Image 1 (tube, one colour):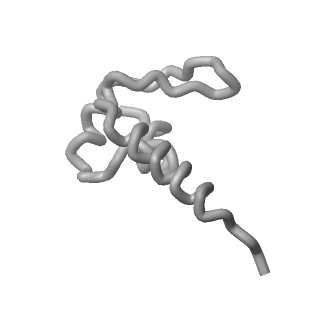
Image 2 (cartoon, one colour; image 1 turned 60 degrees about the vertical axis):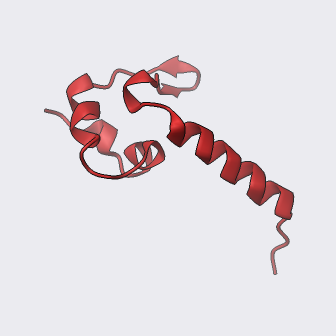
Length: 66
C-alpha cells in the first residue's frame, strides 16, 4: 500500500494549473536548467490540438520537426 498526503496532491494540482495558464509561446522549456530549442512553428501548430502545456512535453510533441 502507498500513502499519499492530500496536501501533496493539491500542490501538484496547483503547479499544473500555473504551468497550463501560461501562453505556450511565452514558455522557455529547460533541461537541467538549460533552455532547449523548440521551433516556434511546432508550438504554434500545437495550439490547435486542444491539449495543454504539460501535454506538449509529456506527449513528446515538442520533439517534432517541421
